[in-house]
Length: 139
Image (cartoon, rainbow, N blue to C red):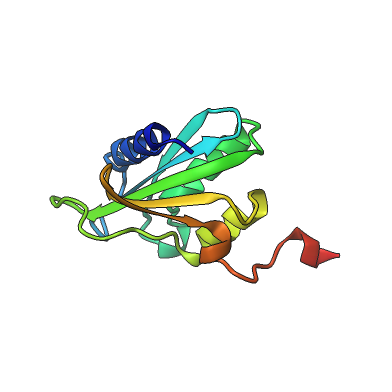
């Protein structure tokens, strides 16, 4: 993945974070998902007063992409921060989001956690979800 593609994904994730509905936590999260054909789907976190109904930015991006027929994914960029602040720490995907990624991606899928276009880290899904449970375990 090129440096320009990485920066574009981070910028797209940051823009998506501005649409977050986070009136309970005040924590904005944005994600930008790069599909195998080069299409990018973005998502933000959408909170709900019934906390279990809350949806993370990463799953929002994946569900939008899958609902539009996408099944091949290359990378996702994630950025998060408290309202009124700049990103000060990396926003890692939660366990449920990692499991959703495992449903659609291989272990080499890239997860970019960013504070900015110049301050980011890249992990593989295999690194963040070792020994995962997947479709192959259902047989």
